[in-house]
Length: 400
Image 1 (cartoon, rainbow, N blue to C red):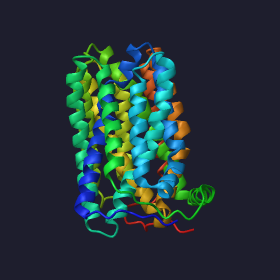
Image 2 (cartoon, rainbow, N blue to C red):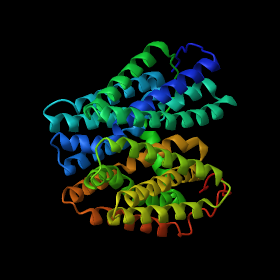
Image 3 (cartoon, helix red, strand yellow):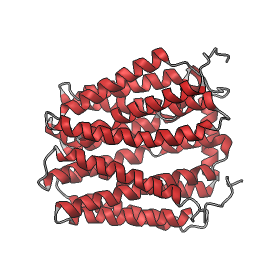
Image 4 (cartoon, rainbow, N blue to C red):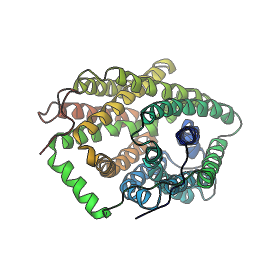
């Protein structure tokens, strides 16, 4: 399919990409400091909040693959604009009564919005800077600014929480919708090479995953470890408030969590020449330990330290897993296989968030956090299977 694409300079494309990434990060993170507590204060139980978080995860996962195909066929700009609008609209629905109905509906909008944005923004900039040395530098710079956006969002949330919790959702929603409109009006379009149907893409990607046993083992290990991540997302705010801390202080905790996750990711990039298997095992061990420390924390200092250690491990694990995925998947199938892996993980995300909500509702924090800690250990044990690469020098793909 032939499309006309308006030409812009590399500098214009880079400026647009960085600005959009920063605004998206801000709108995405500003409500993260009080998401669970705010919905609970609006009358939802922690079980219902867990279901909502699970719905966001499963919706983003299930639609990740088809939205990528739609972005390539109908335009990356259109996909990003639609994704930002849906995400922003979803946040605003949490402010409408009846709270239960609109919150569950909003979760679906947010999940779909994340799915449309995921990969499409990167694909858009790659379409203008492909084969350019500027691309890698742009991505690195945007990652740094993404963490800056999250930090600024936390600082803004600290002020907004001193007024009223709903303003984090209001500001985030309006910002994302405004960014969507500006991106659609002022940004030129580009398209992907859409030559295959969704069914054929799915079939080829599924065959790659099921026949590449190293990849399958890594996926299962990561899936088990992700239970801890979604348990933490549901549980950290209720635990912090239960310890006697104010809702306002959630914003500062959120800033530190973001910074420690970034520090973990940066640490992984510094250790990229080391054995990734060993690094991942250490990260899983730290994650399991932190999860077990959380319910046993006797004061706010040990509780905060447990939170930060967990986020540091998540930063390392996320970067390490992504690097290993890329090396195990042939370059021609990287995007499709990663999308399908995300889709396959959707069910586990929903179960993990919902289960965590049930236990936290009953104040059974030890059970809520010991289960994912155990699963993380099991995920680490799976890493000892012979199919996993020993270090980062393994060949880029496992050829069948």
